[in-house]
Length: 175
Image (tube, rainbow, N blue to C red):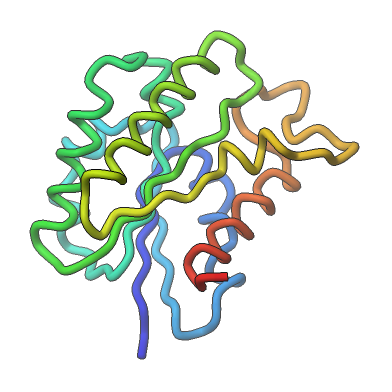
């Protein structure tokens, strides 16, 4: 039995090659990554018909960093709920919401924390919606090498992307 997973995200997913999930998951999983650098929840709402054409059992929503920069917390819950409702309206599928890392960009850390709290609230009120807590994984990281390069406070290095990929893998496989 094949399980179809589609990643709807921004540059974190796109630049990580879908968190390496195609290689991390067993062969019965087919991973499609449609992430676009710079996209917000609003951009995906405007491009939702593109998503409707992809048969999917599990949607991974990895969005929020660009929303924090462009909109702050304004409208994040409404846009996210609208996107989830659209994704679940045309097919029987589940949604994994990503609690994104707060980044090393000080100006958006608090906004990301608030938006992640909004995602927790959405999870509590929606069926077939779960959370992947990347935020906590990054916050509790104790390694010697920082997760972000000095030159880029938003996109993690390979260690960070590997942490994300493993966290998704474990969640999907129920480990």
